[in-house]
Image 1 (spheres, rainbow, N blue to C red):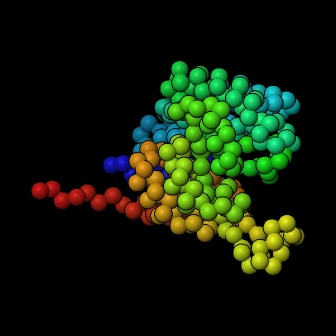
Image 2 (image 1 turned 45 degrees about the vertical axis):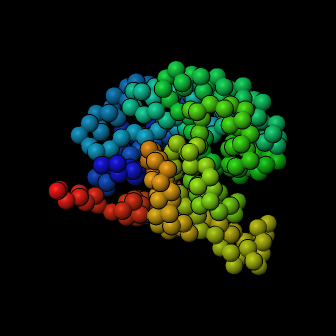
Image 3 (image 1 turned 60 degrees about the vertical axis):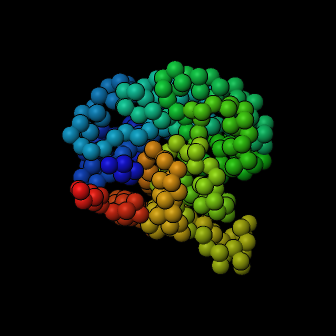
Length: 295
């Protein structure tokens, strides 16, 4: 059955401890994430341990992710580019073909000024990925940046996507998309998904709640917060619509919940919220699989 797996994100540094604890809740896929660097982790040994944990389970590793700035090579991001390379070359050990993360950015410059460096860095990474049968997917988070300035990622706006994919027009370059990061910019994610679905390799399960009453009274630059990141099932998006569009376009990836953002289901309620989100997404997927009658 092509069930479109529903999973969650797990830190690569503590995956061996966390996976056995959360597998019983019914997660079907896992993205292993790293912040700025894979550090001194032995990825081959990590893959062996993770594969042993999943050996008797109906669950897979869907992607490996590195969240840093590979365009600068400075400070805490000095290992980000090397980490992209390590994950590309190690993806097969985890039986996944997706490596994802931030594009990086020339700090505090308009997005257009990052495109030449993006082309230089990711033309090479794209070739390396092709040699390893890997696809690259860019997270669509603005990390507090805008078109004019920021320090992490240019892949948060559809105009930037057009520029990126024109600069590096390779079939193994795509998006790691979620509605939340578009909704915080007051972009309607549904028509965007219809337009860009062929470039979406991986989906993060994260939603948003927009308080239009606050926007109407205070605007988006006032003192009142007007949007919140949410776990699916608690936000404004009908994920049945999202899954329908994905299925209509033969999406072959997973939806992995990006937790630790919800302002209500946090702290001791984190996994309560995530498991509710997991079951909500399974319901939006169509519920339990029912075989057709044989004739």
